[in-house]
Amino acid sequence: MLSIELSGLSGNLAALIQQAREQGKTVEITDQGKVIARVVPAAASDQDIQKSLAALDELMRLGQRLDWGEKADAVTIVREARRDL
Image (tube, rainbow, N blue to C red; front, side, top):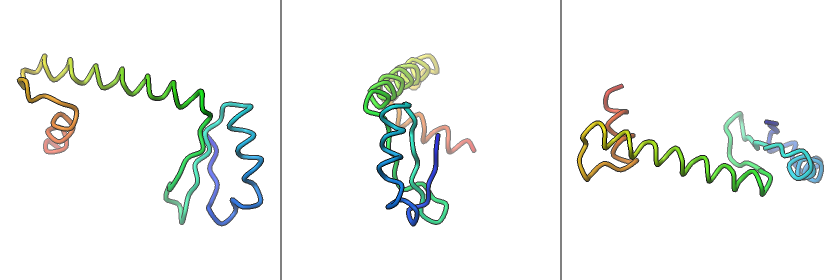
């Protein structure tokens, strides 16, 4: 994954988009070191959605195995896990 500061983006935008399209690379755009946006290849974003959905399904199965009842959803699971920290 590539990263570029917002201040340096204007002169490099075309090259970054080309890398995303042709090389399948994700580019993070940062402002003062904090990620504020990402340029991702369109095909990769479809894959990312599928991976996220699969991970969500796994969380739901885990929640059911842990007997959190019918109220088990991804938000509840994450909140409960954060409380334990």
